Image (tube, rainbow, N blue to C red; front, top):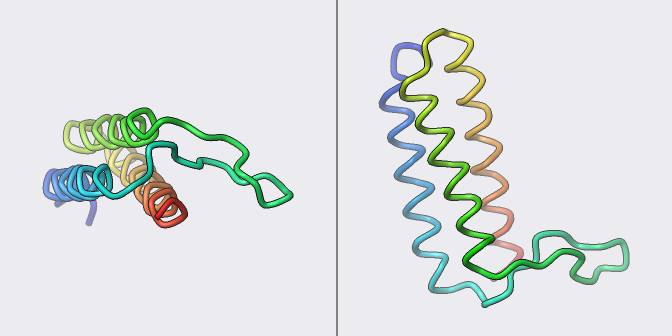
Length: 97
């Protein structure tokens, strides 16, 4: 199924990632917690622009390769990679609200 609709799926992922992150940019604090240490404190923090920008960059790259992949394996690989990026994005936003 992925190989049949890979262009539509790639565009949908790109739109979701861009929309969610542009909206989150206005609501998140200036410093994002990217990892939580064992004692419950902020382990790794990044400025908002780097934290959101990195996820958007990975989403754009993944969507590009899903749109223009050559083989059936490319579609599957980049589809599941984009799912991981999307889940990481949602967890980052939820934990920082």
